[in-house]
Length: 370
Image 1 (tube, rainbow, N blue to C red):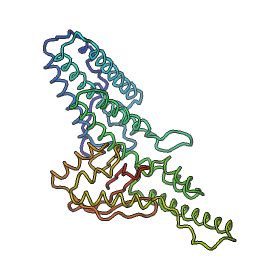
Image 2: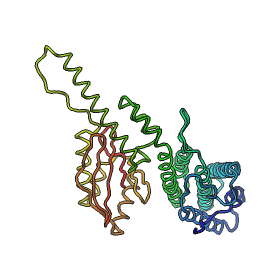
Image 3: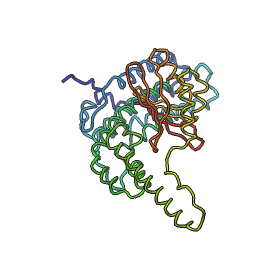
């Protein structure tokens, strides 16, 4: 078996050199410290990206740390280190005795320290989550809830005022976290598949089915799994039954009224959503960036095999990079199975399916490409 690159636990638990932020306001060699911090931080990010994501039950994702307490303590120290640097950056921002050049150097140095600790914190949290019991207990949070919480923290770090280049590096860490969490999440769904199928069979309303889907995050993490297909089918079956019951009740209530056409079957997809998807696909196929972006919400989330992109700016850049690489594709017309809107297409030699979700204004707020 090929050896996995491993980061020794001694390195994983090392605190960042926060005290350097409190040194003389004109400390000699500050530019050299900044360059060293940047190089070290980017090395940590690249190492995280280059490591295979762990599978459930992997006890050696961080070498030398089989004891869960060691991982937890190390992660706590990295989190505390980030808080310390952030607090120091806030003090620097308020200190009017520091010149602009010195302030810029200190902010850059602190920003790269945040990136280093964020990278190590992510590594440690992923290692912790690989050991989690995948079986979901009643009333307990999702087994991978700590990774969802970490994703929110990384977004906070990225928007906390650190330098632009450092914020982009945190974005790379966030993408790698999403990739590893996605693989672990699919394994959690598969481990709970018997219980999920039983819950779906026992569900008597569409609300019951949706509750099962939300609890197990089937829409978010289960794309392509057979149990997710069963979830969609069960939702559709009950939606049709509820629509028929509603139509029957309406007929009984209006027996003396003029005959009317029966109510159409309930559908989770509206004509307005299909029209928005059609406009988006048409504009995308024609390379009309402005028209395509007009159909997206400001908080759009694009999930692809290459990463997750949030907001119109990130989505625009991701599409431009793909076009520049010559890997652009085309999508066919949108379709609906009553529960979702999707389209089939091709990117190079690969067949792809795009799923579209919408907000209350019928703007596309989530696209999943698989």
